Length: 553
Image (cartoon, rainbow, N blue to C red; front, side, top):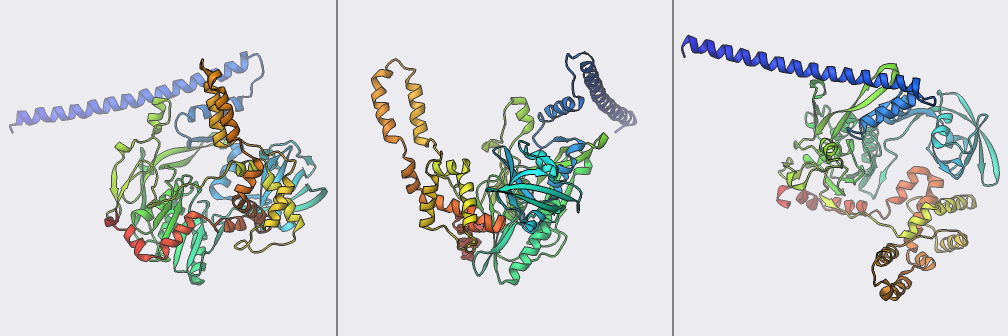
């Protein structure tokens, strides 16, 4: 190549770099100008509204509404956290707050203790499920919302709070000392049989991995040699806790999850850094449509390493990572900064929020565009729609009468009366209400409203509405009337037909009065289809081996 040509080529390349830099600089400046311009417009608008609007405005409330309306256009996880909500956000991410240690909820015109947490002040001083809160210190809370009541109950650790509650016909007073409350990530663990351990993982806040480790070590000391890890209904949380939990079961130095975003500082590969507690114990992980984020990292990583059989239903599909960014005046923003990718290389994010904004409706990744990835043993797995279990279990459905009895609080109220009529019950693993108790429940129901519409009745009702629009309705009216009479349900008969299902629901609610959240979980496992299938798998090592090899597909 002659010198003239080299010189021309060099000039061309330098020119290309200069032009690229110029346009990049210009594009960046244009965007910065657009941001500054729109911020100025927004500030001017608020200022002029305050001056000219006919009524007084609340700038804080109005700006918060504007910010939230803007962020909701991006995705549900990018949110604004004003200073006054910082404590609630900290509690969500750490699981810690200072208060009495009880879940409360609205009931009628007041707030009620729904569940005192085991070992915390509310339970220690004797507060019970179904206690109506009348006063907190000198403030009457009748008619206040749950958020307001919750705020009054919280305060600095080791400070007193006085509660007046109504229990049945009695009005009782309680002096409670607020304590630092750390909500358990593992609300229950135990043995399903002599060989099978079970760990319920409900959250991924601070210390989740420590709680799972402690549960696993304790179960192993009790002689278990197979394990069920339950992340059903777990919405996720801290990524590092998910990594530590996976590390309990796979060797040191293995990739668990990789985060990739627009900025270099959010790109990171998380690897296991410790010696596992047990890298060989046969495992089943239970998941469902409400298992999200960190839950999907745990389930997906264990699936990608062929370390566990996954049973249940396809997970939620949240493959987005959020970072908390500080703002002025102690406000914060939780913003989506990256997507995460599990060891096989797949991202399980199900909804494309960019496409959704452009189409004005939620857009999921179509099956035709989902890519195939492979586990360690060569099993094919797909991206773009959550974690799919190795063995699917159909979601359990309940009879309409069961929904009605729960929704109208008849199950809750009967369990409360049962508790005050019975000083003790059997262990959760063996308790079930008797047929005589069920007959007592039916008598208790007399005169109470619990009507409902069955699916078949709703179909006939819809058919009538559509038929009324046609000219020949009079000709078919008699047939529809006849069909309607035939499908109209009998509440009394439904109580007989669905007796065993309703007894199970009643038993679980009654157990909660004596054994709290732990007892509810324990009694719920007795006829849990996912758990029963998990036990079947774990009893057959060859079946697990077959599922976890590529030849099984």
